[in-house]
Length: 48
Image 1 (cartoon, helix red, strand yellow):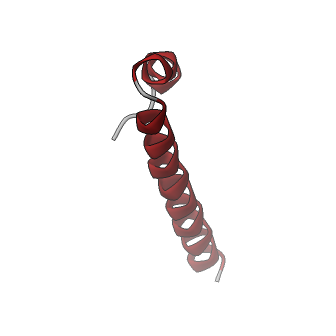
Image 2: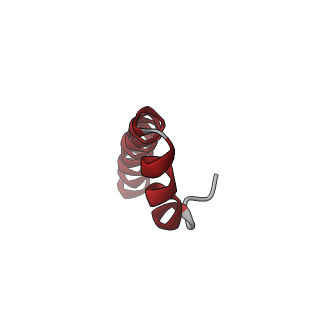
């Protein structure tokens, strides 16, 4: 999934529906946490 165009889409979501924006924020937040954990795990494997 590509989040490149996301900053331009956020104002549209705010105008359309607040709940849509909030749900999308939580999806991105969860994905970021997942990527962070995966990156740390990969880094640890590479260093050992």
